[in-house]
Length: 216
Image (cartoon, rainbow, N blue to C red; front, side, top):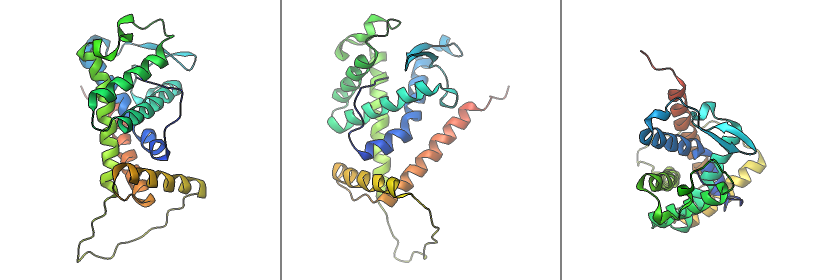
């Protein structure tokens, strides 16, 4: 949905938004088809990056310009949650304002969608709320993965070497420090990397399931 011109606020946002852009898109598409079942299988053309593309597609078949738009939407959701961590409606309002800024030149969109958040229908508000809720879960999952519990009689762990280039590791260290400050829990680069891998597997599984044809 929303998009703004600025970059993500910090390294943690870069990691989280990249991992969950696909999940945000699938949540939006699920809400769209729930409210408008007649649009299942029908193209929904929107201008993305100067090109008209069909956004009513699963992530695996989505146009690269639309994927980039979803990554920006994820960054806006992250910014909203960081700005209003305990106020769901204020965060959703922020997401909606970003969406207006991104789409104000798109003449194909209905004028009522550009109303202030407080004047939107509940269906439209739920689209913004979905971004906020999913991003909160994304941040919470990273925080949960960062908590390492070691049993007293645990077996010695088996280690395998994973090579990470210096630039990527520096970004992980920056993200870990900033996420630690934001969440109040100690987050290590290793834990953030592990959480990222878990999230990629989860999202990839959802995308594969969506792409598989249903049995008749």
